[in-house]
Length: 141
Image 1 (cartoon, helix red, strand yellow):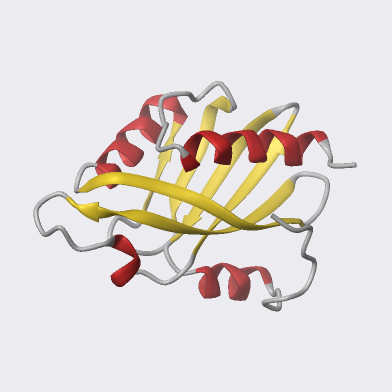
Image 2 (cartoon, rainbow, N blue to C red):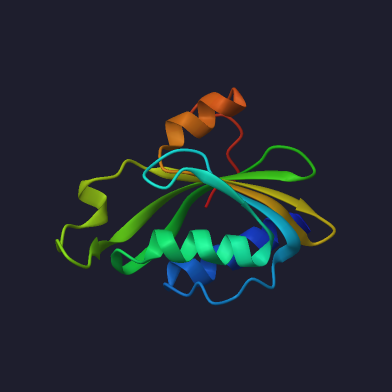
């Protein structure tokens, strides 16, 4: 049976997989939102900061969707999701899959809310930062 934290993260990915980024009900009001690498690296605090960062990330893309490929429960509070993007550049028409490797998101969940979310453009960096092997600890997608 999946943990409550895993169910929260799966529900987030269900919306993101449809291209729906409108809800932040899952986020703690003081969430720390981080892009660890990639074109928009930085850190923001709170719902407004997260919305600003995510909106800036989404703006150059048309139909951007995020699909979970693998969920890993690391401990009682942290979940790593290996994912991939699909969509195309608004100006260039280039498919995001042509310019990106697989990505990852590291969720910190406490009390039913995501308190910290670290986005990685490159899932290899996420695995290295966490000291994980590519195949270890999988809970399936």
